[in-house]
Amino acid sequence: MMATKMIAVTDLEPGLVLADAVISVSGKVLLGKNVVLTQRHISLLTTWDVKQVFIDDREEAPAAGEAEPEPGAEPAEDTAPDGGQKTGACEYVKFVQEFDSLVTHVAQTFEIIQKQKLIPLSSLKDAAGQIHSSIQNNSLAGLNHLLISDYKLADFVSRHSVMVAYLAGNIARKLKWSEQDIRGVALAGLLHDVGSLAGGKKNDPRTHLAEAAALLKKLNGIPGEVILGVVQHRECIDGSGFPTAVKGFKIHPYAKIIAIADTFHVQAYSGEYANPFPVLDTLAYKMLGKLDTAICRTFVGQVKDSLLNNRVLLLDGREAEVIFFHPNGSYLPIVRTADGQIIDLAQRGGAGISRIMAPL
Image (cartoon, rainbow, N blue to C red; front, top):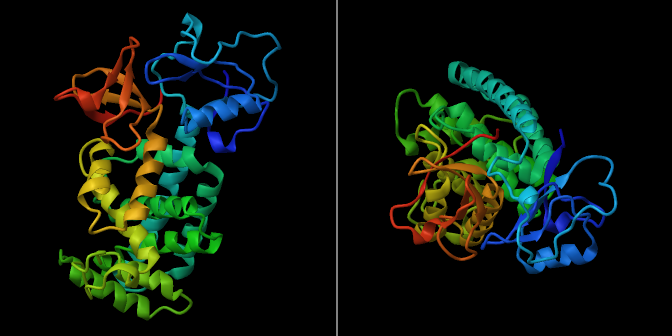
């Protein structure tokens, strides 16, 4: 079976081989399957605003002379995508297993916090280091697997905390933060709800933040920016947050990132199935006064890039593949159904996405 890998167009090099056709919004093949990329192809992909493509991960390129449609040509039958998930089921399963193993590790650590009111910092630093390494190794594909795999357990504090740490680390990497800061914001993500573990049955976010601050102050060797990331993640850009109602630049960047990751995960994965699409609209339009605008835009763009080529279940029961997002438009994408129909969901009243589907 051919191995495939999703690569950002900005990371492409001449000589790589397309594992799947690049399709325009209108359904035309821009570049065909098995094309050996040249610098001209890469420049064209940039011009067409294509964000990422699937690359053949075989060691050898296909034999010279294989068919290569001209840019803009009509799709041939043997290059028409089948609507299935192309990220690779094996890679997906491996990532989910590693993710679940990390969640188990964090859950055991959180049990210690809950029972002893002490934070095993070295254990959580190790977990943050694992998250950093996973982000470095998997990049866009890792975020893609996270978006597909996590559902039903958004209220389970250890799984939620690991997810927020992953998302925060991904945002930091996209912002080109240092490795130390990526690990730092991942650690803050793991700790952002630690107060709920020590707060007993009190379901009060303000109480939880006070409990978190008290626990963190007892620790030696925890960076100050990590503490700020935890205790300020409920603050808002307009000063309407808590615990101290600081605003704007007075909120630490760690806290700004964690606020976005926390909001996204709680809202996108609180139901029975994962459906992040409506939350993109929330982040992009409804909460710009509460969350950092620049970081929101970075994250929304990152998630949209990752959701491309994913299988989804439409509200009408049909399966489809996400093929395009309007750059400045609705969170609803353009999709291609299994029978090849191209649908702009933003233009279809009542049309929408029920959930993301795992790879085949």
